[in-house]
Length: 295
Image 1 (cartoon, rainbow, N blue to C red):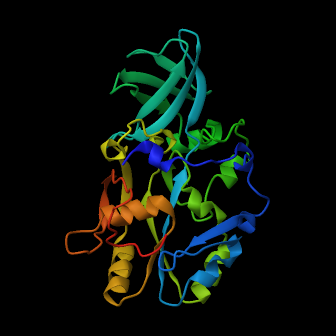
Image 2: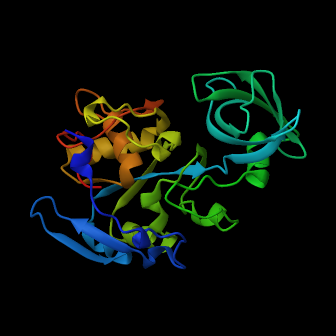
């Protein structure tokens, strides 16, 4: 299975550079795997494709404005992209840096009036481990001075509006460096319409990582290795999914991040396990789904 098997034409003018005024204004493509039919309509019609008893699993990760601009204490501009927090260390993050001359171990970075960082380890190329120090809460500082890391196909500077619109309406747990984009079109009204129809909505968390921005660099896609992303499946979500499957009800996953988490966290008996871990599941044609009925 080769990379060029997945080539398709995508006209540049069809890649939206700004969000629509209304989240539900986007188009929706429905592919029925049973009949092979493909239809295109408005996103608000998504409610029509659910029925009472269905379970919809959403990803409630929250994007942090992970791009930090500043300078090295010795001079020279630097840009830092937060990738993920080191396990067991609240202050040290794995980061990517961009500078005319990359900062070495021991280099101190000035990233705001009250935020500094020190390179404490070279890490595995191209990453560096940076220990941050600030007055007050670190994530609150990031919310104030950080910039949103937009995908490479968005060819414009970020704006203040992106802190609101490059975020789902149900985002809760901060830690992603990119949005779970399938969820961006949902509104509180759409979610309520689904609940009124008898659809159960349950969250999980997968913090979308830097790998979402990186291309597949191997010709044989089976050789591609996904970057691991941290996830949490709540006890209530696991119970709801397992009960639905046992009674023959459908499991919908909202986007690829929810899908990969649900498929990764299932055991050999087909039971979704509650808990946390790091997901590196790569799904490609031929994969047999264990949990998800529709995406």
